[in-house]
Length: 329
Image (cartoon, rainbow, N blue to C red; front, top):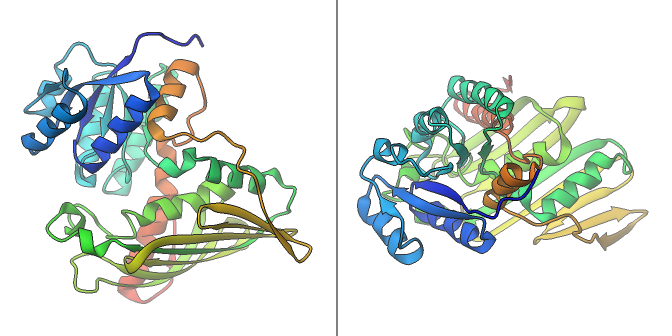
């Protein structure tokens, strides 16, 4: 596919932290520009316009955004409860769409959007999900090594995830269970769940979990023991009130252990550990979407990736409520 010299014209729907983040990535990429802005709080949209997109229009409603005739694509960065209706409206308008995770609030909506994505692909309309870690050199290299088969089958997986997340959510939609069901697990933690499926190609089978809200309205802590396809056990912990940001992911294969520690990829085999070079391309969801649209590249984060994450998360929450193991899917 030939690369276009004209910039793709985007609407930014949701102009808070993630809207600003995606804007900065778009400016760095250089192949797109935001021409319309919408946020439930107009002052937030106006601040983003003044800071980064002075020629963009601030719209009062989503309908006003979609009424613009100079749009090619939209980025949706609103609370989860808004994603389904906004994604449907943008797809109906014929726009390419990048939607932040989680894709939607319930399984029925996710399945509906997955069905829409399949019909969109048939007419070259791109619908992508914002799991940004799928685009990084670190996790693309990890995935290549695991799926290569050179280290044998996956035997077990351990995931440790900590963040001082609770301190930032009071009074926001992230502490509202009607908009952020599952709290830390479904918000920041969803990236960690997705990484396991992205790196291994495995899917959830059953789960047992315990969780705590720790004074918030949503879950802050969770300890998880799960089983994936191919009889692979997984242990995960989510600590949303830690004193630092950190994570470890260990994928133990028959012939080697592959470990992400402090943003480095290590391999252990024959009683030795060594760093692996991160030689896959490094990117982000905005550039990834532009690559698919303009260059015909594969979409690393299609809407289908939302389903196992949702199923696993709901299994964790149900098991926590009932204190019983839960079958998934």
